[in-house]
Image 1 (spheres, rainbow, N blue to C red):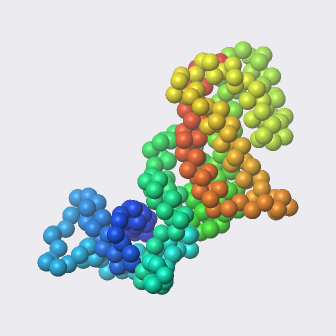
Image 2: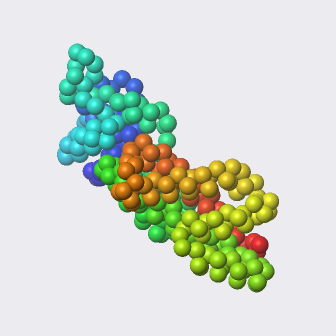
Image 3: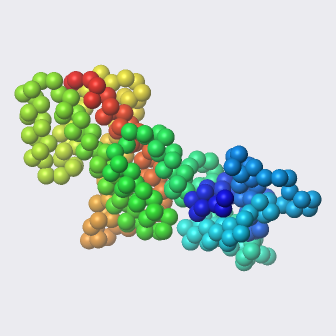
Length: 275
């Protein structure tokens, strides 16, 4: 069965972490080898004598991989050329940015399918709206639409925070306090003001939380919320004059998985523990 775009992109990301490739053909060989080792559905007979990983590639797959290589060039991960003596294709090398990405050895935003699989594994209870906005943020990111990526990621973050605030309000045991907090949240004119109401109550709640939810919760919750919100506001208001760049979105997308994981963990705790 021929590879689809997302699968081929994942194999190419793995190939880029391997040593000794210096040109397009070397990456085609590496992707072919990775495809052959990917699982029972990819089992193939041993290669003929003198053949290489390219023999595992089916019709059209070399062109598909070449297309992805060009998207990585556009995204600033790869650049044509190997050195001063070989400055053009078919030679390739990682950019400084590309090397930093590969050194992390984690699922990266440049591999949207792999990123979303990791997100769904880490946060299986994530609200569908969060997943929808996150998916669009990733697509904007890989196409270089940095303002749009920041706005979509901000939407995903906002949905998570609103669900967290609502789950806290619903957990309040004292009916008078519950009514007061719910009225304050309802009247708050922005998510920032709603979050401030929750933030004021949160210190007393932290003492009741299990350690896996309380560890570094201020940095992971308030810190990341503020970062993503700031980028979203700057991207959505051209008059600010601030440009959200690729590296900022890259960092925020990496932070989003543990951030949303903690939000959903807290929501689950509030749903099961009256406060």
